[in-house]
Amino acid sequence: MADAANAASAANAADPRPEPPVAPDLDACCGNGCDPCIFDLHDLAMDQYRQALRAWEARQRAQ
Image (cartoon, rainbow, N blue to C red; front, side, top):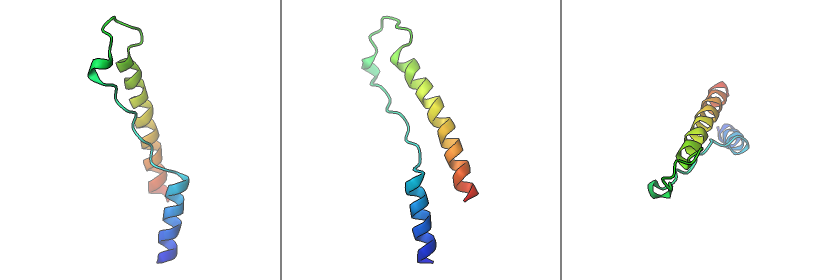
């Protein structure tokens, strides 16, 4: 049973769970209507994170 736990631990180390991007502070936006705004960039990063998380979860279920 310890071998199975060690194998699972090694697999997790080789394929770590994706980390969400750090959200910008609410006061970090300059309010000048930048294109893209830092919040737009964060939204895009969150979309990429969600896709990566779904793929990671699917790989975890397949193991």
